[in-house]
Amino acid sequence: MKKRNIFILTLLLITLTIHAQQSAEAKALLDKTYALFEATKGIRLSFRAASLDTGGNEQGTMEGTAIIRGDRFRLETGDLDIWFDGTTQWVLMKEVNEVNISHPTGEEIESVSPLALLRIYRNGYTLMPPVNVTVNGKKAQLIRMTPTAANKEYKMVEAVVDHNNYRLVEVKLTLQNGSKQVVTISDYNANYNYSDTEFQFDQSRHPDALIVDLR
Image 1 (tube, one colour):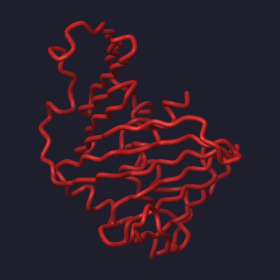
Image 2: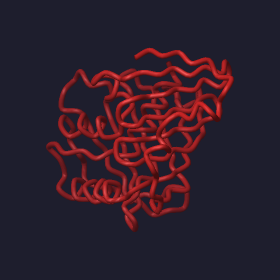
Image 3: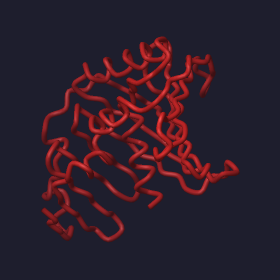
């Protein structure tokens, strides 16, 4: 599903860092990016995610906000809201006012958890030396990553990092069929201190929602 792919990509860009056969300069840049993320007690950001066909034409977009603290997150978009407290996941589908509750398996967590995604990308990619670029008026550095194995889902990952504050600005994933997924981050703020309840569904705020417990 395109929405699921965009969601996975959004979470990926939040914590992307890679440790493999790589440029030392690129590794150092991504290490700093992740260290800053890991040190914060809460991040809030806005994002725009888009799927592009092989000709570069947009096939679908999604805009929303995300809050993150370690392995916990809450994602809010026009179509759905998702909470994950490290163990339980709640997905509110707004159009039908239905909430699905689940305990994701290890494999499912790899599709939704920022830290699980981090572990996936620690190995198996070669990093190219950073290239100076300008994105949305910001001076940044682009790091291109290619998989060392032919069976990877992506044939290239491109991460753009603001060199002044080591924050991710944009991530582009090129799939094996040549289509792309692009996420652009804005309004990144790491000065929050979120409580555990921020990452749990509050049924009192959605009293009429149909609850489907899949645990």
